[in-house]
Length: 430
Length: 175
View 1 (cartoon, rainbow over the protein chains, first blue to last red):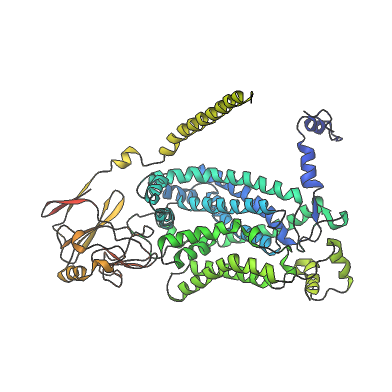
View 2: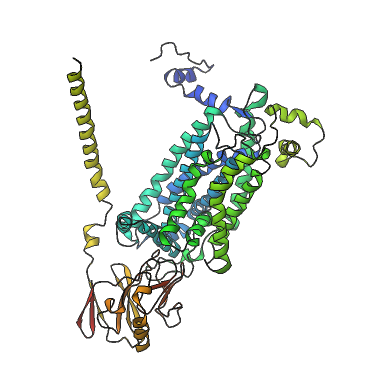
């Protein structure tokens, strides 16, 4: 042990007693009190905090739902209906949980868009990005498992279709699928293990989130200009500035999610999932949850079973290597006049894929899905490396303070979301 | 060089420790993995006997066997001819109609699309039957012919024929 360790001194003797034995107070002070945030961060930087809050909300509401849920094929559907009708505030728990899942994905998608547009995945935050993609994968797995639990028609057939993806793997596919299901088709064994895994995976996510946050705190947060903090003038302390800002974001988020929970709790639900699971009748349209629809569209765009499955999983795996596909040293797309538009095109394309993923795979929709598929992979494999090579980035500001120093002239057009920075960036783009 | 025998002994100890540890870990993990495979009672799910005397020509029934739907169809003359006319070599999953039936008017199929496991339409008169007048999977648009063979769409294989036997003219035993 390090005998020379300097123990932080507080006024409160209880805190000193704890600090001497476990330096957790100085840790929190360092990581969440004095932690320097770039002062130009806009509200896009609040979505990490929002995602953490949502994860905790999902875990809490999930634990209370589990107290009344029965993971058996004969009773699961009825136990969920009992939660809705008889359990005190059961309806609220369930609507918080089901809509919370959808909002969790909205928040995480915005968080990913932020990271992509402002180049947060680049040196030295590549590992942070990789951990983030892991969290995204775990979230998709968890939401799929959870969607099976109410044991409605969509639950059953969604589970059937997704587990059948594994049967596309040559030679071992069928055996692997049977092993995953514990039966030859989705049945009681499947429901039981899906419940067990749905309960435990969020805690795994929580652990990876811990690493994700720890990793970002090593080099500090990125910012809309994508340049590093150089002096104290470039940053503000997390407490109170960012805490207050995140709190404002949280209030806005609370209003949005409450509006849905109380006034449109089934807006994002599928009607067919209020019909108990029937293994002999497939619903006319099997629709995935909207937040998985872009990947479902990719699956269906390929007229070959194995090819579709490979491209669908490939669409996620490709994210892991994005930091190495992008050759440009400039982080923020605000200073990348060409790549910026391809990046926005990528977001629009992803949205379009999600839209057609919810519709039948035929005619024009199928064509859109195929064009979208080409752009999705083209963006990563061709556009991203190539543009980084030919593009001449705009001149970066010398420092974060410099962004504001030049912005003394009246702010024409006004800053986005109350921040002067974006208007400023328009100037530097010229 | 005097050190070499000693190093060899250490290498041996290290290697054997790691190997034994790996074998031990694998032996410990195996029961956990194996416990996820279908249990004995699931495997023992037996056979089903079906009375087919009431099925008219052109009619089809759905029964449940091992949790899956099984289609039993009494085919019409036209349907049999259509199935026989096809050259097996032109198909994605080449198979002659004769290899898929025991008596040519009776077609027995596992009613699970070989793409992603949906139940194809075509059992009811009002159902869509697809371009080859057999079955049509609504999930991702696979078309099956009157022998249950894949003709169009993403599915890679023909509809499975389950093991079955005719106990007498009116009874089929599936499984």
